[in-house]
Image (tube, rainbow, N blue to C red; front, side, top):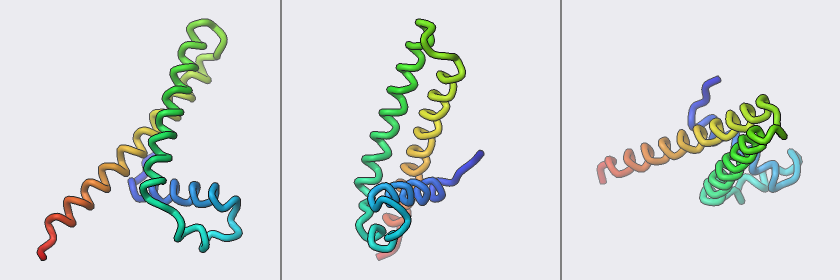
Length: 104
């Protein structure tokens, strides 16, 4: 399954927007309040929490408390989250570089 960075950013923005508003009823009102910096911060927090969860699952696996399938799922989720954030970061850097190359 392959996502472009813009698809990932749009999906994350919609999820964050839905979480802030509490449903699909007032999406227009919440769209203006969505802050890109806050969205990036939330994404970084998500990466950190997913990575910590994967690490805890791996430790639980060594003690026999967690099934291997759960460990693989947690690691895969952390990897997907990290790849999404890296893809968005790369697109933001490219956009910034394009802006710098624009003639004045």
